[in-house]
Length: 544
Image 1 (cartoon, rainbow, N blue to C red):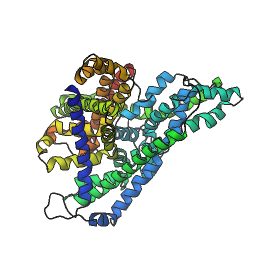
Image 2: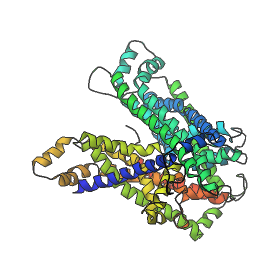
Image 3: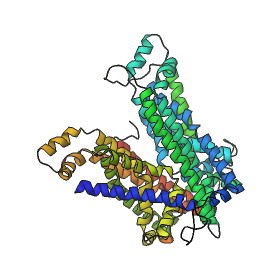
Image 4: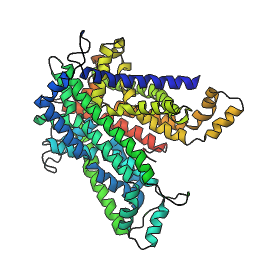
């Protein structure tokens, strides 16, 4: 019974994901809002949208930012090799700092960069002008280095060091071993990282909104936001076409990724002993020190300075980061019923999303890893991955339409409405944690329980779940973090009574409440850092 409950919850969110994509694509082939009667399928919406000069500017902007985000790949590759193969000094301290940025919202990174390297930031002349298309793409790349790092680290840790030792015993230097042994063996992961980075760059919303829209630029996500929020009468067909282009692009790249995974896994097989060992590539202390210094410089200028600038700005009542410091903004937030309500809404929605989402993640993981039906396993695998094809702003738009024009409308006025959207979008993160842990449990343990007369539910409750209880807790915490860091999904779903921090930051930008924005951002960063520390203390890393 309990197994069926988990699978039903997983199936429910699978249906929501399909409905979310379906309503966007369906609307894109209609000539008017889908709730009107007498509409027929047509491509006129695509034709009119493609003739819109703003759409072309937005598409070009998204494409350029997607391509520039690929700059994260060589940085992540160097960091992964330096940490796991060269063995830089202080790797145990440095690595968590490298990974943590992936848990912090991009909109907060936008504010952090603005208040550290912007015209009135702490170091305004260090990077030059940070507004514009090219700076936005470069910042997007620097923010997404951890996403590529975790993929590359997984692959590097899977290499048997005996192959490197053979190369070294034949006189190959460290650089040659990396170039001829390590890099060819992780080439599939390099390709996968590039695909992921391009998708992440294309779907960027917060950073372009702060740093590119300010100078009149457009990307597809801000184009959708402009059509829905900033227009007097939302143009549903144009929004749907722009959203569909993003979905088609992401799905195509995800299919390409799956195809390459199957093809390259056969092509890059290694021959040798089944016994695997993981070791370092011996380099001189000098080069180890150079690698350590390079990563420290990257961390200081792209992670530490921006976050410290954001916190310092929240403590400074004067614009520009100069003068005395005080806790005035924090006192204002904590003494304001409205701002306290925003924080409590954020935590409440995250708690609901984490709790229900963990149930969905268990259902997905059991169906993927333990289903005897191959078709069921593949369908749940696809359903859990499918939401990654939808940028946050597109997911928010889809759920807004689902709530407004279906019997689900009452949910929109409750925290559950945003929580369901968060679960649909981010359940893949918790599923990865749980599926990996369940996959490590030998099926023989379950078979022994079944032989002794235990039902499927009892086997699950007495054998499987106790063995993965730590993974369940980690999955809950990961879902909690990804819910409180969200801003783009909630931007189109929040109401005054369900306002959350991320959406408030978007709506308050440009209102002059700089102190409140930075203080709320700093509070969110502190909460995320605290939860991330707990996750790492539990022994979890987002790779391996």
